[in-house]
Amino acid sequence: MRSGLFVLFGAILAAMVAVTSWAGMQVAVWNSWPQFAGDRWTIATLFDAYCGFLTFYVWLAWRERGWAARLVWFLLVMGLGNIAMSAYILWQLAALKEGQGVDALFTRKAA
Image (tube, rainbow, N blue to C red; front, side):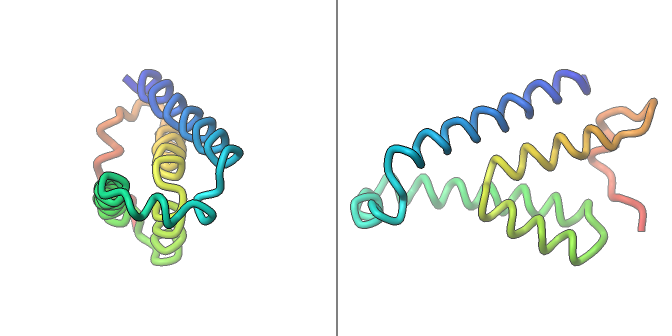
């Protein structure tokens, strides 16, 4: 299960970096914002994405004990979205101790 999650979240990270880089080289978001903002589906998709980012962040903030880590991860998740989210999961998977199952991801970190 752990290796499968590494593959899944590694693929998500690679795909998001690739597609974000490709899109950024084609057109800068800030130069095309009036066109994007005029499309209702763009706005709906952004709301959907950021609600998902916030949902993930609530779980992350519950896991992390320190306020500094919570703040840094909030900025990363809201700024980088799925790139930061997949990186966080990969980091947590790598931090699992020998013999720990992935269910340890769903427990709080020790104080």
